[in-house]
Image 1 (cartoon, rainbow, N blue to C red):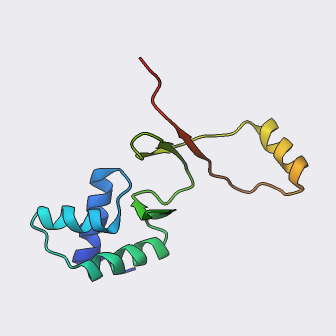
Image 2 (image 1 turned 90 degrees about the horizontal axis):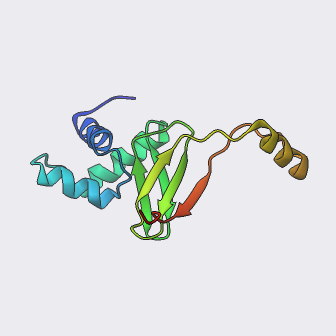
Amino acid sequence: MRLSRQRRMVLDLLWDEKSHLSARDIFDKLNNQGRHIGHTSVYQNLEALQSAGVIECIERASGRLYGYRADPHSHLTCTQSGAIHDLDVLLPDHLLRQIEEQTGFAIESYTLHLSGRPRPS
């Protein structure tokens, strides 16, 4: 994959932010930083980066969100703010075996999506 100047701007922003952003958020942030890029360029570069497995895309009812990680990982969504946090979670072997027995499938990989709210201090 060719890493054009615009593609690099999008990627650098996602790496710096370390959060999940919409294409509109990315467009606004880059242009507010004086790094002029058009809407179409943002969408095209996000699609290319996601297709190449460099970034992740999360489908939400409100639209797509893009994250800086492409490796298998899980997510925790805050039910109050909607913020998405990346998690590295390993399920115990006995639980994976139990799931395999219940489903008849051999688990090759997994991601979890958890939802919750901050606990009171």
